[in-house]
Length: 411
Length: 105
Image (cartoon, rainbow over all chains, first blue to last red; front, side):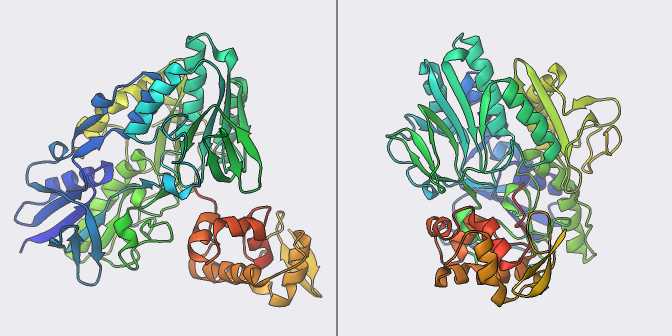
C-alpha cells in the first residue's frame, strides 16, 4: 500500500527531507507531496551580502520545484490549517491533502507589524530590514546614498533566524564604510535585547571584543517598544531612546499563520512543539517538524535543518515501520560569521556544548572562533554546496549530523 | 546559593535571586518579594501575571518570555512593563518563585 507523506514548506528543511525520502522509498511505497505558498526558493544566507553590493538578488533565487527530485509532487498554495485529528491538511482553496506522515517545514515568518511604528513613517526609506529580499534590496540603495550619521542595527526580540547575522551586518558595515573612505563619519550601534553580543558566553565575549575593536557601540537589554521613523529614534519599553538616521531592524519572528489556526499544533508564537531529539511533534505521533518551524532550543539556521534531516528521515522510516524512534539529534549548529575585510569566524556547537576554539570538523580543519580568510572562502563556497549537495540530500564528505568533539578545546 | 527568610520562612535563592525550589514559595511571600523589587503596591494585574507565570512554569518547565507573556497572559507587553518596569519576565519570575525563564537561543 502506498503511504502519503505531506511536507509543508519547500525551503531548506522541506526540500532536503523530500529528496532524502525519495531516495529511501520507491514511488509504490511512498507518495511525497510538498506544499509551499510561492515558487521561489531564496538562498537566505545571501541576503546579508546584498545591502553591501556583494550579492545580487537574482543570483539568490531558484525555482522551488526544480530543487525537488522526480517523483515528488509540488503544490503551490496557501495553507488554511492542519486537521490534526482528521490526518489531513486543508489548503486555502478548500482542497484537502490526507497524510500518513506530516512534516512541518514552513520556517519562521517576519512580523514587523507587531512592533509599534516599525512599518509606519520611514519604513523602506530610513527603516529597513535585510531579512527579506525587498528589504535587503532597498537597503542596498539606502547604504549607497548614506553619507554619514548614525546607523543602528536593532534586534527587536528573540528568537530570530541566524542570530549571528546582526553582528555580521555590523562587521560588514564597518568594512563597507572603510572602503568608501567615510568610516569616521558613520556611527554604528548594535541594539539588542540580550545581555551581551550573542547568546553563548564564550562566543559573546569574543564577538563583543570584536565590536569594540571595530568601533561598534553595543546597547544591551534593550526591549524595543516603538520604532519612531519620523523622529528617528528607537524607544524602549523602559523609556530609553536610541537615535538614528538609518535603522536596520530585525523584526520579531513567529511560525506560519496556519499553525496558529490549527489547535494544539503550535506554542504562543506559532512554533511547533517538538521533541528536541526525535523531531516528532508533541501534538500527534505522525506529525514531525524540521528547521525554524520547530520550537527547539537550537539556533534557527539552515545548518540545523541540514543536520536534522538525517535523523528526521530515519525517524519517519521507523515510524512507518512501527519501530521506536531514534532520539539522537543533538542540536548541532554550524555557522560562518563574516567579519569583514575578507575574513570570517566559524562556530560549531549543540544543545550542550557552547562554541569554543579549536578546529572543525576535526583536529585538522577550519579554525573555530578565530578570524581567518579560509573561513571567509568557506562561507562563499557554501552557496554551491547548498544547491548541489545539501538540498539534494547528499552527505557532505567529513560533515556529519552529530557535533564532532575532536578538534575542539573543551574544558 | 543563599538562604533567605521571606515572610518568616526559610527559602533557598540562587545568585541572581531566583528560587531554587518553586515548591518553597507561598502566596503570602509575594508582598515581601515584590517590595525587594521596588514594587510596593500589588494590584489584580500583578497577581494575574504572577499566577500565570507559575502555571506556565509547572506546565512547560520554564517561565514564558515577555512576548509570549503578552500573547497569552491577558496583559499586553506595554502593561507588563508598567507593572514590572525593570523587565517583566525576570522580575515576575523572581516574585512568582520560579527559576529565571530560559532565554531564547
